[in-house]
Length: 498
Image 1 (cartoon, rainbow, N blue to C red):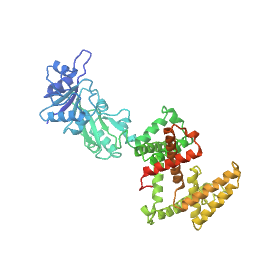
Image 2 (cartoon, rainbow, N blue to C red):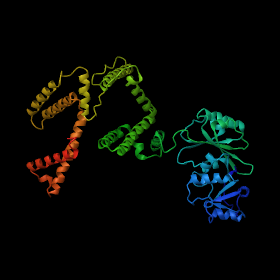
Image 3 (cartoon, helix red, strand yellow):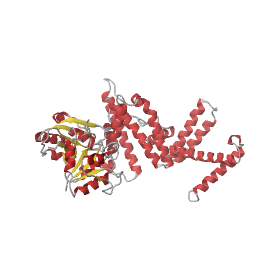
Image 4 (cartoon, one colour):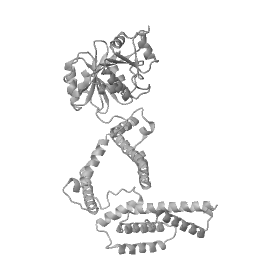
């Protein structure tokens, strides 16, 4: 198996090629260029040497990187290969890293001024991502960020290489891949793929050898860690002016809006839109976590740790010794656990109170968020009160209460505060009816709103087809169109769903 070298064809002010590059080209059995009429081919021919083109290797000029890598590896079976290019090391993305990962030996590069230049320019490093460049002598005091690129320079001998390997072993797996760049006697640089463990036994003969350590976690732009990093960039000095101005309070309305938009996607059955809206919800979570971190109040890790602990605590039938055979059993356990959590919070608040003050025990309705939609708020209050024993014996009692509240509403004056109060009483009592029937009031009303919207739009379409504006219809005409809209909807559902 022959060697493979990457040779840059840059010329000095006098038009001469670097003598180290020329010597490496002369050594090669095959000198490969992209095409026969380009600058690279002409430069090699001026040296009196022949060239092989991508076409000679059976490749088109725009061949993908994987195809170029495989063709060069196949050619190296017959002898030494030099891939020559102008603009080195700005070869096609993936060629050098592909050769390094798939070649049996090392990869030589000519000419380069330093191993750091080799690593930064040759390994397809995304320079918009984080790159930490650290001298070996300073590595002991470095705080590692394993989701960034790391380049360690100044590895002058085997002792330093061993120390670097030992330090990296504290933060990376022994088998984690690294790339070493060391000098060759012929003037170029030698790239080798190794592992962190290999560094402790490396035979370093070149001063200022460098090591590239790839990220050990998901590389940008993917992954939750990258989302957290991006939000940190937006909030940092010099970041996005809008994001930097936001507070927990200013973002509150956006959290509600994004949650409702996600619910709308669920109701529409649009899973692609749901994935997008859930991303917007997650963005709000990470933004609040970033603000919390900046205020030294909490971090995103605290948020995650808290929900993990809560999930385990509230599912003792999965992670503990409790039993729950049905959903009703789960909800009973859930309510009991939440009551315990509220009591524990009250006790902690009491411990933190000023002398002479004690926090009172939490009430039955404590902890229900008052900013919930009104129906949802009523449901939670009703269910909590019923669980405490404030409940009718059966649904007949609830119906009697509905009738009573309706009569009280009828006795009020339209538009009066008393009427508003009695309307609320009627609605709250209807929520209790729904609870007894096992129906979610919020979902039921949202469903009715959606149904009303569909039918009204159908009425508008019918009227428009007749050249009529619905705003000018009589009650009898409205009733006729409404019945037709209901019939149309029933026909669309089909007999099995009517």
